[in-house]
Every structure is written in structure tokens, then in C-alpha cells.
Image 1 (cartoon, rainbow, N blue to C red):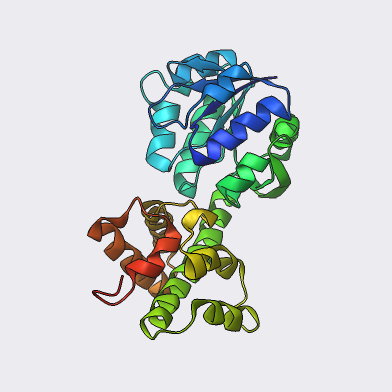
Image 2: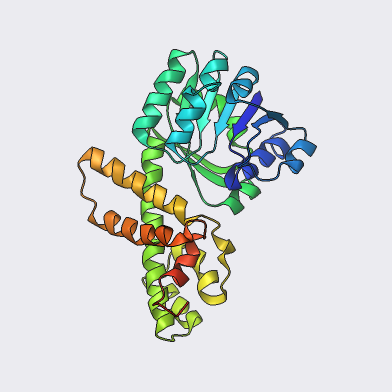
Length: 293
């Protein structure tokens, strides 16, 4: 199979290198200023393409790994988009974090053009993408998933079919709401502990040996204790986007969301203060009392 990827950022770069190195597939990628350095990929035989249409014309499987629904929609339906060059029978694998309703619209457009669409958002981090051990939550036709399993196997530890098209993105938003919500709460508590001159290692140990033990604590502990933010290279602006996607999904479903609204307000205040490109662990410092950072 000829494989294409659109979005060679922190996550997409790891996916691309494993499609090449572990999977042994021919790979094309969209040449874009938002890409991570691509020298390693080109040295492994990857080829740059100027437009999504160029990738679609050459590839049987196209992986999308971009920020959110506006970007996905532009890639699929925009000028020189995937629909402009789609080969019949090609499978689009949307690994982005997107709104389920948008996913359904994109899937319908691809099907009308003779292609197939599955949503396959990722859990885990850029480190796992680099190692080829991501987890995917896949929504869509199981037969479409089976077609692309050899490609997905090159960069994943687990691929779970979770239901119809859109269910992958719905579950990803639920997952990210819980994960980001936990980390935001923990960052606020860690800031309060620091303001009170509590030893950060003691704070982490108390939580780890009690009800605070969690993946959120594991990911923030290096920053809390040593100021090392690299355990979770995830921009605060992206966390805000994911929480607001969850809130939009909840609103569409008529669900209550008072806690999500509060998490959004806390993260939004950090973004408005100019910290959108800081990593999520740095919320620990951002939430300190004025003058204490």
C-alpha cells in the first residue's frame, strides 16, 4: 500500500517514521511549515507533496494528524483538497482530535467520492508516537479498519474498534476531558502546595500513595519536583481546544457541563495571559499566586 500523511507535527512525525521504519511502507507527506524537521523521513525515502490532492492521487491510505475540525475540513473539502484527487477505494484515517458531527460530514463526503473514512484518534503522547506505541480508538466500518491494520500496526500498541464512525472522536473527547481535567485540578493543587512551601516531592508522594495516584500525576510529577516539562509536550492552547470541543459536544447532546466550563475558564485564563504555547505541566507555575512564579 502507498501511504500518505498530512500533519507531521509532534505526533505525526513519530507516526511517519514508524510507517517507514517499522512498517516498510512507501510514504508521502504534505510539505507544510508546521511540520517538524523532515530530514530523517526523507532519508528513509519519504516524498514531499505540495497539496492534499497530490497525496490523494498517489496513496491508498491517507493519515490525517492535524489540530482539529477546521483543519480536517479544509484538507478534505478545500481547494486542492483530498476530494480533488481521491482514488476509488482509498481509506482516510483521521487521527486528529475532531468534533464528531464534523467527522460524520467528512465521512459522507469521502464515501460519495468512492472512498472510505474512519476516525482513529490517539491516546498517549508524542513519546509514544516516536516509539510506535500509540493507542487508537477507531470508529467506522470494521471492514475499512481491517484494510489498514497493517499500516496502523506500524505505529501502535493497541487498535480498538469502538463503534460507528464518529464514536472514536466522541470517546477521544471524553478521554481528553477527563485527562486534561485531572491535570488542571492537579496543577492548581500543586501550585497551592508550592505557595505553602510544601516540599514538592512530599506532595507527589502523598498523592501517589493515596487517592491522587493517576496517569495525570505521573505526567506532571517531573515538572512539580524538578521543573521538567518534557514529560507532556502538549500545548496549553491545544488543551483549551480539546476542552471546548468537549463542551460543544456536550451542548449538542443536551448534557450538563458545569465542571467542564470551570476547567475551560481556568485554561482560558492561562492562554489569554500569553501562555498558549507553554506545555500543560507549566500550569503548575502559571497557577501560583502573583509574584510567586
